[in-house]
Image 1 (cartoon, rainbow, N blue to C red):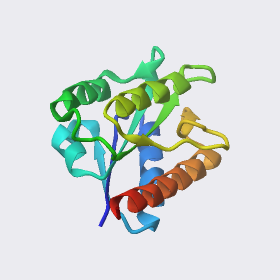
Image 2 (tube, one colour):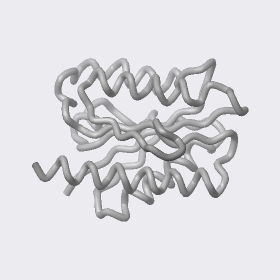
Image 3 (cartoon, rainbow, N blue to C red):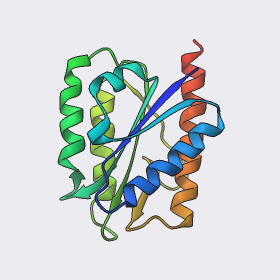
Length: 159
């Protein structure tokens, strides 16, 4: 069974709400989903998963330091994450608050690990985003994102 790690940092609960929706979508495909706060996530969890998805609020155009620390510690497994599926989502306090740069920054780190990143030709090309508390549209996008990531993970894990 394919295992997906969804790890997030959330101070207000907004990013956590998005993580829960991504997890719901991934669960539809029957994957083993590990939903964890960054504080409860280890780099070993990343190594043991077939897919790794990170969520963060936006601080000064980038990910929360708590998430960035975990990503920095993942150098321990540099090269071992090659070929796994990766994804990201983020929240911001206002429109134009840097949410897209946050997602892209997370994805950059996953790409450096050699992970396979799934884009979308529709809205949220890099991964779901929300301003403040995710509305129904953002929640639906998160769920669909989780489902798409799970389908890709299952395809790659079967090979």
